[in-house]
Image (cartoon, rainbow, N blue to C red):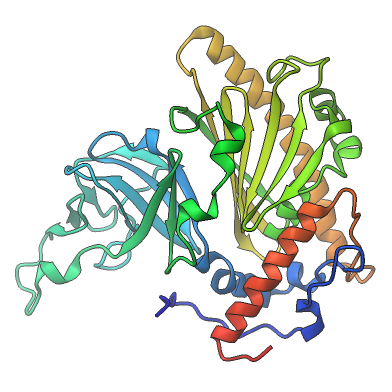
Length: 377
């Protein structure tokens, strides 16, 4: 039986034909209401985020007992921690007393997990250890108030969490990526920095934008100097898509001309941007119908040397420049989607296979959740 999160909004109103999947040559894009209607913001938690794996961090951030990461699972706060027994565990980052947080930073180390509100203390296995000023409370047993667990799994050094019962194992979801990017290995990379961007657009607008190179000449002219855009390709698989490009022979920003850039998107909101010696993980989290947050985690093979430090700063500065360009255009698109001038568009067969693939997966998730809620579609 599938776990049901505490929120379970009613199915938004839509026309059944908007869930139909036609070939890309005849297909329309999803309706603008899916980007602007508050009902879809609530629905996305149930239909999409609570049923799919979510990226949390890298195993290199969880090497020692007490190392922890905080993350988001379908809108709920989660903490992932390395136990004294070496096991990796995840719990809702919620104290069982009155809902206070156990960890506030993205990552850190602590011998215990202590609520920042009233000081309740939990062992790294989630069991309740200390309860200040509770001596006069009747019928209270600490064994009944351990932290609520969340599923956690790793793949190639990347840590993922799941708020419910997974549709399939994490390894099956990501099958084929490690072989494609070889000889590069993700597990040995080292965390450098997390950068947070808040964007005034629906999370799906940001994902759509990520999934096509159609806009590159118009929005990212400098990125076009780095990539060999004439050989830019999109491939789709069962649960993810890949945008692939050799690096430009005229640029050495990311590597030699013989190297390539791999941009993987894992439904619903995770991006792996892989280049020589570097991984940039992006995750897009909805905040409101017209607002999302995008987290950028940077990982490198070398983070210690002076040469590496200079390279990382240059890399992040260029990435931030590209991101600011994306933010501006995504915020303009959100305003356009909310206007009376637009409802549904069409796809470029040549350039928008990735967007079509994402929107097809979204329709499948919506239909499945609606049926689970007892709505026959």
